[in-house]
Image 1 (cartoon, helix red, strand yellow):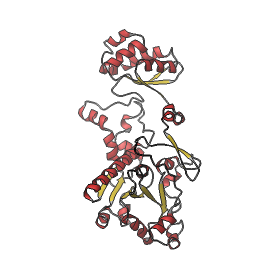
Image 2 (cartoon, helix red, strand yellow; image 1 turned 180 degrees about the vertical axis):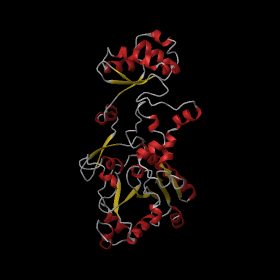
Image 3 (cartoon, helix red, strand yellow; image 1 turned 30 degrees about the horizontal axis):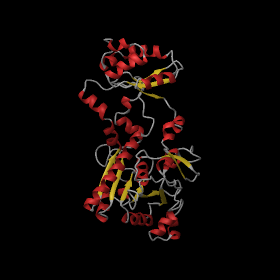
Image 4 (spheres, one colour; image 1 turned 180 degrees about the horizontal axis):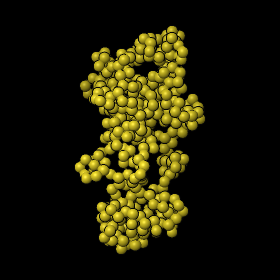
Length: 392
């Protein structure tokens, strides 16, 4: 039996944060009913068409779900949603602030009607405070949380290359819902959960936050190098490729000097004999390292680093990640069905000898509308005007 088998999740979701959370619940066996707009559905379906005509974001976050379309401007559709929630275990939404309340499904009302229901809202800034109604997109939350201030080069602040604020909020929603399910087994009562993107990402900013609040300066933007440890980051090899390495302690530093740079005496150089000194004199040290590296191919440098037990990495492209030998060796790829046919998908990273992850199809817009309506006692033909574009 899967851990969440028998748990039903109803989700008014769009974009990334909520769909990422509910997909992970589906991975563990929960039934996830995704409520979408008639016609286009979740607007993330239209972000791009690169996965055989499907959106890469949508493919990533929406497998193993059922899709029902409902035009919630109409009372008939609201009755359907209410019926779904009356039999659900979890309700998740990430619509604009106040939108669900205006539809008549506020947390307070639902908690009174369905005390067993776990209700989770995801928003940019939370349900109260001066920023509550401020529009929140991933880049903007990255800015507000200070992530952009510590990312990039000295001259160019940069966003993270992925939707990290959405992902952070999705992860805390996922774990928060699991926590509430465990609590409900003990108390028999549901819960009201709130996750804000700002607070989720702010938690992930713990190191630079403490460093800045209690230190004398904020961490500098250092590109792909570490702001407070050196050498830790990219170095150019003779074939013009970048080799990444990280030195974490003085034992590794001495080994790096002796076995990789072939200069054991460098470890005792007064400019470099502690991490703080290496950071202060990193430009001089970088020149020394790259002067040695320019005589070698990147693959040879990595071999030396491996032999010396110094942490290292190649700079992989996304296509190289898609063919990563470690992922292949560990059988981390599966296939899922979709409206565009079979697609490769990574198996979730938490593995268990007791659980086989659910890897069911990615739904078309409204694919399960008729079946769900019939299951919950509604006449599909009468409901058609409220489930199709250009209806009632």
